[in-house]
Amino acid sequence: MANITLKQMKYFEALVRHGHFGRAAAACSISQPALSVQIRELEAELGAPLFERGARRVRLTALGEDVAQRVRAILGAVEELGDVARAGGQGLSGRLRLGVIPTIGPYLLPRVIAALSQAHPEIEFHVRETLTERLIGEMLDGRLDTAIVALPVSERTLEEVPLFEESFVLVRPAQDAGKPVPDAEDLREMRLLLLEEGHCFRDQALSFCNLRTASPREALDASSLSTLVQMVGAGVGVTLIPEMAVPVETRSADVSITRFRTPEPTRTVGMIWRRTSPLAPQLHRLADVVRDAALAERGPGLA
Image 1 (cartoon, rainbow, N blue to C red):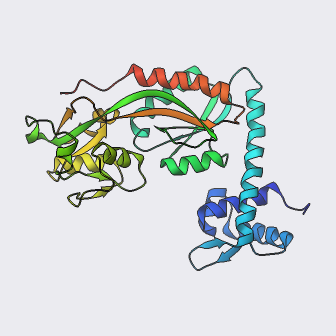
Image 2: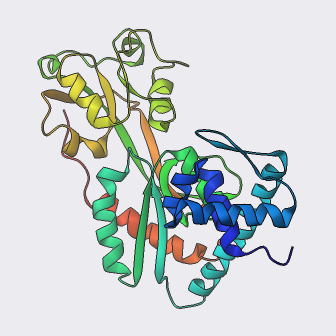
Image 3: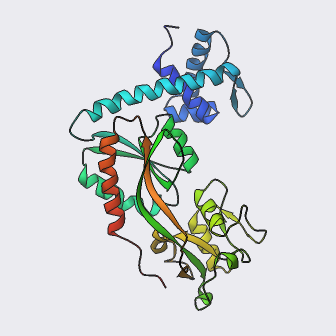
């Protein structure tokens, strides 16, 4: 087993993640034949196939599943060696891999990255925007240093640091601006437009309405808040969006924005990282910068 290399393990992990030789090769910035050679050499060293090759996808064998768990642990440990080196200095430097969910990224990241870059010009930020579940997986695998998400994530190996509370607001067609504000029970009878499955914001909206699943009146599952707001402007239904999204998403839509009556639906925005991360002290300081940047610019007053 002495001939197994770190490079082979990285290529193996990429193939596990993408399930496709071409996409894995592109992610590793090598040719597909070169990736295939490295995977075959790894399988030869282990004495058995790690993947079932299909026409469109590859799947792990039983041995491959076992190897994948061990490779993730090894690569995570290697990544933490770099973290140890960075943590040994007076502050963070070099690459910082930051994750963010789509219902936060477009609205918070511009001012947060500007503030972080000013406070820590020695850091090179690599940003990854995707759903919470994927961010957690990449965090546990050591592919991300920290992420900005909606809390709680309820993963015992991750530290959760609350940053601020944010209200959800109601988006209705402009002609409905003067109508009474619906409560959660009223919303259950309306055509409520939601994000597609997998978005935590969808689950939070359903929870506010005391619904386990979306109503049959729902007209679409959107992949972005922008689509939801534009559909409301077209008169299709109503939706909820986080307050931070109001300035961006409503500037070109014929909609009205209204606060709910107390108690308003809210979410807690926070940062997460591995409890074992050597960068934890520095990440706590980064969280303070993110919090200050977010609170310095809140949305405009709402009706």
